[in-house]
Every structure is written in C-alpha cells, then in structure tokens.
Image: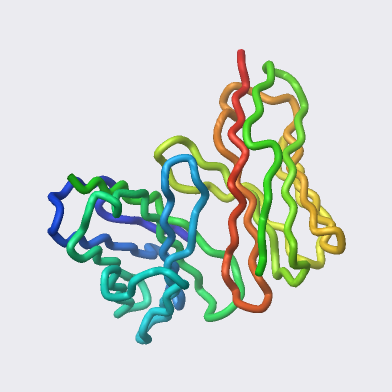
Length: 116
Length: 112
C-alpha cells in the first residue's frame, strides 16, 4: 500500500516552454501533497505544500508564478514549471500524506527535468 | 530553524563490515525521524521511521536509534553488502509545521 506515482519520469524541453508533472496517490487519499526539488549531489528541498482544494503554500524563495501547483483531487497534484529555463533543470519529487498535519509522507519516484 | 546534518558525507567500506551513519538536528521539537535510501537517479525508499516517543526501530540488518534530547540519530547497518551502496538520507518531521527537513545525505559504497 501507500504507492505514489509520478509522470513523466523524464522530460527534456526547450527553454521558454512549460512542463507539467503529475503526482498521483494510487491506493490512498492524499489530503496533503508536497513538492521537493533536488539538485545533483544535494539533498531534497521543500518547494511547496498543497492541501486538496486549497492554494499551495510556497517555501521562501520559491516563485509561485513560476511553479504552479494544483491539487484538485485527493489523488492528484500537478506541478507546472512555466517558461522553463536551464537553471530549472533538476530532479522533482512529490510526496503524499493522508493527514492534514503530521504523519508519514510517501514519496514518488521523481521526475528528471532537463531544460535545453 | 531546524537544521539537519549528516556525517560522514561519504563512506567506503569492504563488504561484511558493520557501519554507523550519523544524523543530528538542532530543534528537538520533532514528530518523527525517518531514514531513507536513494539510489542514483531514483526516488526515495523509506527504511525506518522512529516516532518522537520511541528510542529505536529495527528492520532486518538495519537499526536506527533516536535521542531526541541530544538531537541525534544513528543508522546501524550490520554485515554490509554491495547492494547496500546508495545515498542514505535522514529527515525530521517538525511537530510545529509538519514539514520534513532533510540532511545532505551519506553516500555509501560497499566494495565486494
């Protein structure tokens, strides 16, 4: 149980285009979903937290207009990187939790984004 | 602000050795602490989760301890195998915010 999927696993795009990444909880209802970013040889940094039906809460330094997060259902959250640039190239990982506040997070397999 | 530090950053050992990975955190107001494994280019695999009221958790050859008062956790790997080679991440869940704060990880290489 507690499986989280991400799609796509890899994406290569041209600079200036937008990319959408999906995060799905397959066997549980995810009240809260989290989006992380990981640069090479670095740890995971939380970008934003989203509760189903509410606007996402972004961490300091993360541009909400650039990284659009939608959590429209209890099993799906999307992250859209708008007008992507090479510096946005990174490994994006989502996690999902069945609780609104505290509790275990279940991680997706990640999406490798490369912006040319 | 919670900070999580892992030592060492990298470790190379021969197969069969027992080893200890260290994690320290600055704010003791945690809900739980987790150890994850990450293979290159892959997502996270949860290894052990220790609630703040617990002292340790065991799974197979892995044992994780938690000393909340001193802000420390250790991951003990017994009889290491080449398949254990990966990056091990420690993360604490803040009891104030519910956010997971990750350490930088320890990259382990077990040589056959």
